[in-house]
Length: 256
Image (cartoon, rainbow, N blue to C red; front, side):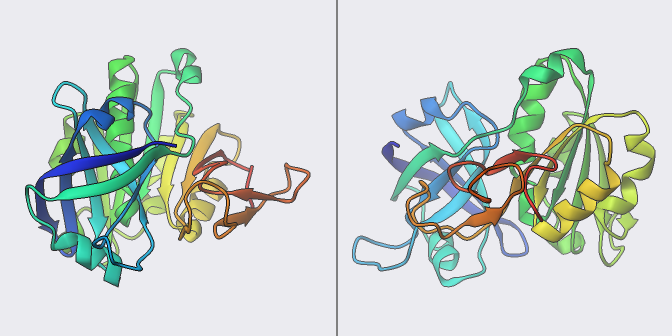
């Protein structure tokens, strides 16, 4: 586990309560695996707020710049949204186990499915897969057009299908409503989002290989506090720690 002090180069609102923060510093050079996260200190030195786990959205290794997208919803992330260019942010990471990419050498189609704030880590993942020569399709789910973001950026990587709950953009409904035609090509599934969405994706993808990245509140971020355990039937302990055993698991490995 490494601690880094990174400088904010920008921190802007790109959709309703969704912020894009760019950070730079020597520690960014270690952030090379899609699906990992940073445990970010959101307050000042005297703050008693816990760190917040934020998925890595993108990394520019040449510029030593990492991009994080987050929703300013609770007290901690709202404080983070008020930080400005030039301020320093204390982060731990990269943490957790990221997405498995090796098996994609034998499979030329990947389906990446994200909902809400589960969308950001799929961007860095999609860029990695495209570099490997893999065909990438995205299904991105948002509440409404006001909550949508990065759609044009995703389109630069591969086919991008958008769903919104209210129908204000793309297909009206949920990400699973857009899966039917795509899964017929038997892609490898990569999905990030709330447990209820991941469970629905898993049910629609029976018989396919895939990986799920779980969203969960965390305390320490390194597996010491047991604040983010999830039941599993594949391990003797009967549980996994999302922060250290995950956040990425094979489909069917955890009980959603």
